[in-house]
Image (cartoon, rainbow, N blue to C red; front, top):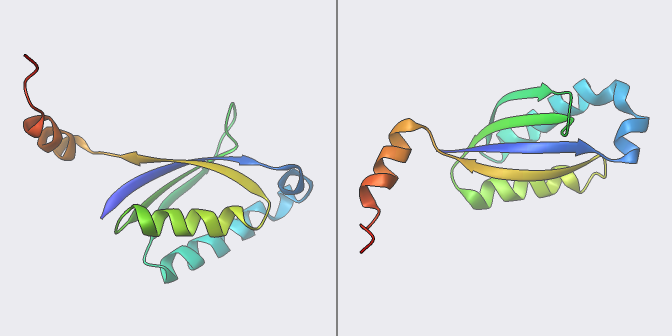
Length: 100
């Protein structure tokens, strides 16, 4: 499974209905699980982003499909990043050709 981190911002619609944000998050987790994506954590944050989602998906296609479904509801805009843990990064670095 690949790990993804989504930076989420509420739209005007999402802000108007902010009180149901925890319920929407629970529905998102359920929808993602049905699509084979595991939502590990959802954090509501202060600063440049309103929410951060950490999830595991089989690949980029499933992660993209789940995030498109979420964004299609009109409550959020997302930016999703592929994340690599230490062992994954060691493998990537070992495959990098030496620059001449």
